[in-house]
Length: 549
Image (cartoon, rainbow, N blue to C red; front, side):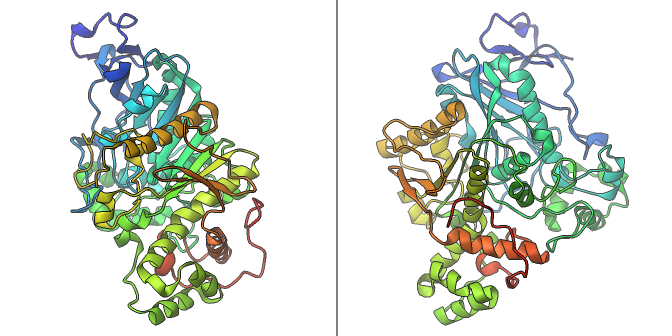
C-alpha cells in the first residue's frame, strides 16, 4: 500500500516530523513549542465485515510515508442528548476506527509516556475533542498517546455464537481488547517517537478510568503500563459470560436478547447489518455496553481481583469531583422526596439498620444536596478510596484527590465541580476553547485558573516520570497510607487527611452485603435510587485490610 504522494518519500530520518513505525512511516504536524502531533495512525486492522466482533488484528503495512496530520474517524456512536454539556459530535465516524494519536515533545529521547483513555460511558467519546489535545502535556516533556476503541454494541456484545468461534471461548470485550492492542503498539513503536516503552502511565476519566481499572485486572495487559491515573472511575459488578450473578443476566443472554430485538436471526445476520443502524437500534432498545467477566480478558469480578491482590502492582493517582452528579442527574437521581419526613422514611425503607449512618452523612436539612452527595459517594467516592486502599495494601504509593474547584460559569448553571470539569485544567486548555463541546461552561482565562492548571499538569507529569506527584509552589502530595491523606484540588490545592469521614465505611458495608447476597448489582442503583439493601450477612464479608477507619 502506497500512501499519499511522492513528496513524502525519502523523509524518514531527514525530517523531524517523520517517524517509522513497525507498519510504515508517518509524517506528523509540527506545532508550537517544538511539539509534533502524529494523528490518525492505524494501530490495528479495520474491524469490519467478518472482523466485526473479533479481537483486533495487526494493521496492514504501507509503503512510502503516510500523512498523520488529521485525526482518524471516531468509532460509531449515537448522538449526544440535546442540551448536554458533553455533546460534541465527531466530525467523522466509521466502523473502521482503530486509530491513535501521538504528541512528541521537542528533542524527546526515552521520555515518559502517558496513554489516555477517553470517557463516554462506553457509548460515545473520541480523542479528537479539543479537551484532550496533548500539546501542553508534551511541552512538559512527556509523550502523549490518545486512542479510539470500539464502543457500544460493536465494542461490548457477547453472544453464544461469538463465544463458540473464539479460540479463547470468550466474547464481549472487544473495546478492552482494542485498548490492549493500542498498549502493545506503544510497546513496539513509542521509542521511535522518543518515548520509553517501559515507562507508561495509563490514565483516563469516567469510562476511560473504568477501562483502566479493568485493565489492571486483565492478564493480557500485564506489564504494558507502569503507573495509573484514575479520574472519576468506578468499580462495578460486571456481567459474567455464561451465568447470571448479582442480579444481572449473563452477557451471552443479553446478546441473544439484543439479536432478537434488532431482528437478527443469527450471527451472520448481525454481521451483515448496517453498522450505523445497528448502533442506533441497540442503544434505542437499551443495550448496556459493559465489559464481560469471560475468564480470558477479565478473569473474575474486578472487586474480587482487588481483594485478592491480583491487580497490577503499580503506583496510582485516583480521585473524584465534588459535583460529579450535578451534570448527571437524569442518570443517578430519581424524583426527590418533597419533605424531610418523606425523605427520612424513604432512607429507612432502603437502608434499614444502616439508615442512621446514612442520615448522619446525608441529612434531610437539604434533600437535594444530600441526594447529590450520596449518589456521588456511593459511585465515585467509594470506588476511589477503595482503589487507594487496595494499592496501599500492596505496599505501593496511592495518591487520592478530591477536585472541588468552582468558577462562575459553573455556578451559574448549578454545576459546581461537575463530572469531568477537571479536564481543561489537566490538559492545559485554559484560555483556548477550540474543539470544546459547545455547551461546556468556560473557565475564566486568568492567572488563578492557569495556576491551578499548571499545578495539576505538574502533579500528573511528575508522577508519570518519577511516581511521585509534585508541583512547584503547591503543597506536597502525601500518599494515602495510614493517615488516609488526600489532596483537595481547588483554586489553591490543599493537603488534608480523612476525606468525608464515614463515607467509605457506609458504602463499603452496602457493597459487602450485596456481594454476600449475590442478588443486587452495584452500578447505577446508588443513593436514593438503590433497592432495599440486603440485611447483614451471617458470615464475614471482605472489607479489606487497609488503613484503619
